[in-house]
Image 1 (cartoon, rainbow, N blue to C red):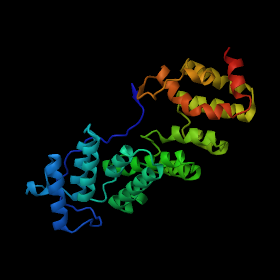
Image 2 (image 1 turned 30 degrees about the vertical axis):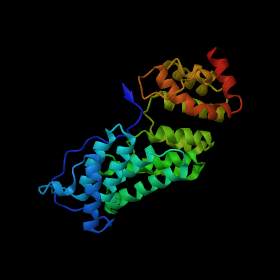
Image 3 (image 1 turned 180 degrees about the vertical axis):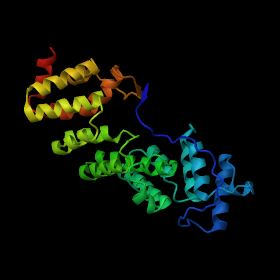
Image 4 (image 1 turned 90 degrees about the vertical axis):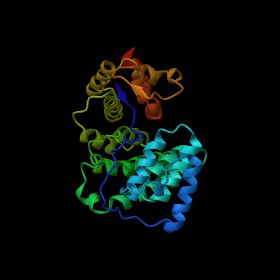
Length: 300
């Protein structure tokens, strides 16, 4: 069974290294201890002064608190834990991600939180890894908060109508991590198809030539139809779509049948997989002249 995304970070073993991660101070030490003690008392958390043997870096302590916060069901407590984490270390990108995911109603506020998370991740990682780590950026655990923040920022920018910025972030994330553990290539493909950037969409398809998934084949079929119309290659691609998932075309032709909520998991060939492709792809298909009629004719 495949999972949609990787929103929550895996729990990391405590790092006993004494190496400090450079970060700008948020408040003076005495003020920080006082503030954290108050939060810790209210939330029932362990304060930094309660463990003289704790030799973790500020970033490690903040990150461990966020790992606990991801499991906390109470929203207020979860947000307070994130704020405590940022008092411990302002470079904790996942704390900004948590606050952004809990933010509601004001998109520019959510964008600002994710942008701060990206900046925090850049500070925590330092410049060298952006030069030396390109190509395997998801591998080291310490890179993942930055990548989570950047994915959240890209999706919010898209939602805000800032298409060029969103697409730029997605392309750069794939440059950093071509293995694409986060599935950004699928999101990017929808964005490129919807904005009719077909040359870029073909480039993206060709960067993953061996991928044989519903998402990729549906995208190929649409791009082929746009380029060639009812060609032999387009029809062959559509047949592969139907072989991969018998529900996909049905959802494209009958959007009212799509589930109200996006599935969290899917199996290959399932209705859930078909819904995950079709829902964000509807505009691309319906705004391509003749494409829906072609689907109906060739799958009748």
